[in-house]
Length: 166
Image (cartoon, rainbow, N blue to C red; front, side, top):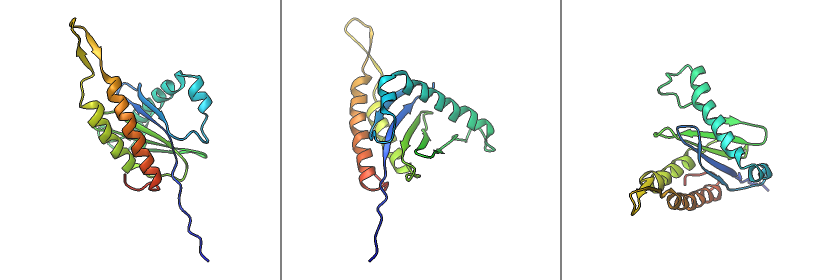
């Protein structure tokens, strides 16, 4: 009797880091095996981490790369003992970062689907609008709510399909 093993893909969390190395979106999908107490009790940790990671990815990695700095995307995968960190640089200079289990080594389909959702829901809409007094009012909260719902669906589909195309 042969046993077949199904690879269980786990996506723990996602960061969206903008060009200035600040976090613009953070989402936890699976809290098993990650320190959620740190993420929930210290609201500065995701901000600090995204800043350090983006600075290192776009700065240090590009400097030591033998590839032309204009075409180098920096680090793409940091493999750890318990987790992998996948970093994808978008055409707009943002970074989408996924924390996964160590089994998951290829997240390009997940990145592509999340980036498409980002463009469709957040980037295509203006960040500010004028109110009746002529003052700028932020309107990104609603766009990010729609983006968060789409990302939840995308990640669930990616995990359900075992890391296959979304």
